[in-house]
Amino acid sequence: MTSGQGRSTTVEGDPSRRVRTVVVSARGGARWQAGHPWIYRTDLYDEPRDEPGIVAVTDRRGRHLGQALYSPRSEIRLRLLTRGREAIDAAWWGERIAAAAGRRSGLAATAYRVVHAEADGLPSLVVDRYGPYVVAQLLSAGIEQRRDDVVAGIRAALAPAGILLRNDVAIRRHEGLPLEVVPAFGSVPETVEVEEYGVRYLAAPHAGQKTGAFLDQRENRGLVAAHAGSGPALDLFTYHGSFALHLARRAAAVTAVDSSGEALARGAQNAALNGLTNITWQEANVFDLLRELERRHESFDTIVLDPPAFAKTKQSITRALAGYKEINLRAMRLLASGGVLFTCSCSYHVGRAVFGDMLVDAAHDAGRRLELLALTGAGRDHPELLNVPETGYLKGALLRAVD
Image (cartoon, rainbow, N blue to C red; front, side, top):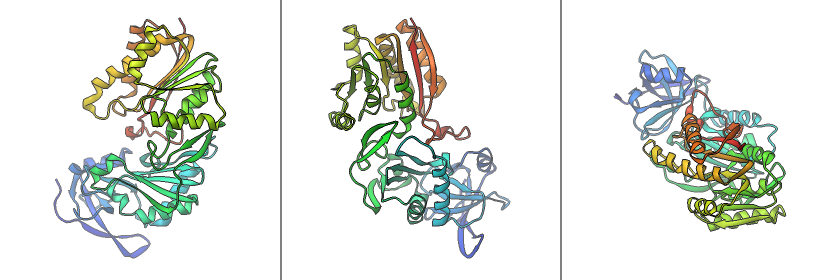
């Protein structure tokens, strides 16, 4: 549908500054009107097809629709930044990032997400704070082209001691961008001690999962800890032990399980940091271990299931659901009467309704009666927009055995 080489227009407030123009279809414009910030390649009539960056967007009648990040090699060609004509410079980024930071006031943590990309009106930008340091991700070619302005905006809004770019996310390949981890300002140490709800742990900004830790589960960790029993607890797919640390302050003993010995070693460090000696760190395949625990007729007052994403594509949903059902069914059988199970999925392709239906089937096959205590998502520093379903990837359920 694309043709031509695009046009240019003048940015309001700066007559000398001109930006390229992209013309979109009525369907593309309607997506913005409906609140979704993306326009796809198939909804473009005219585009420059040259360098990524920021472009003005119009409909076929020349009506201004906004300004957007432009990625000429991506299926997602345009990501809306503003409906206005203002200059999008370092000051603009700084104001938007500062506004996002203001919406996070009052969080009981020293590590949290400051900018959650599309959910904060800053598409393809992730900014996480770890104490005095910032770890950011630039996830599109359009925003990568404005790297200097974005970094300057982060510095102005957050005044960090150092900024690290964790640009090692696979999505960058679809944008024609390299995968890299590079300092952008100052220096960020290999590990940073952070705190949530009185629990301390070491985040790993350079090499840890995501930007260094699973910040999106923070409020769920607090919720589970508040409902945990005093008997034995089981934390499956523990990674660095974030759930286990919270459970260990309530439970007599915690078994924390992961397939990575390196992750468990970091978990043990975190336990020592908190003076916790009642956690056993076990390297094992969770599927195999659950079968073994069931054969031994073990039971636990509290169980956490926080697996990695089993469904990375739509095509893998069926197989993923089978995996989710197996681990949940076996965990339900291991749950003591009155015990609580927190289970979740971070697979975007497995929606809330499908996840809930799977839990119903697992409870039926396990022969357990389970009370639903809470349905959860990501923490409030990872906001979810109804108009942008891609922001609602994490879903969880807190269940209590009542049989």
